[in-house]
Length: 134
Image (cartoon, helix red, strand yellow):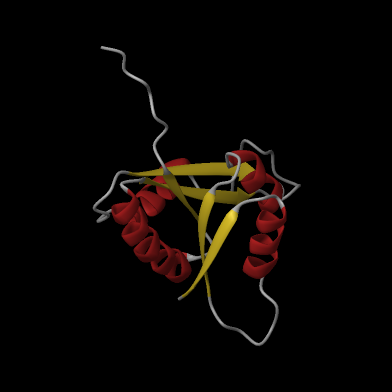
């Protein structure tokens, strides 16, 4: 019998803040259950230029624990990928596959936030982006 490997559908959540990401994870969890998919949380951590790219401001153990705690409680397999970078938008573009499904949490504010700009840039690249209000 011939078995064909089928790529698993993946719902990507981009970390934009604790409250925002929790709202995005709730929405992504429901989507992932309905689609029989997994969740990948991308955590682009911007390292300022005076610091070495391999020396982020948050300690590795603390950051890993913080982001793993956010992902706990999902009823579908969830992986967390911490990305050390200089530019969040470029890091997200490089970490995503072609035509990815992405959920981004944001808050309504009277001033322009980075999340809508990131969502627009990812849409221009051909990704399906869903914004969720926190």
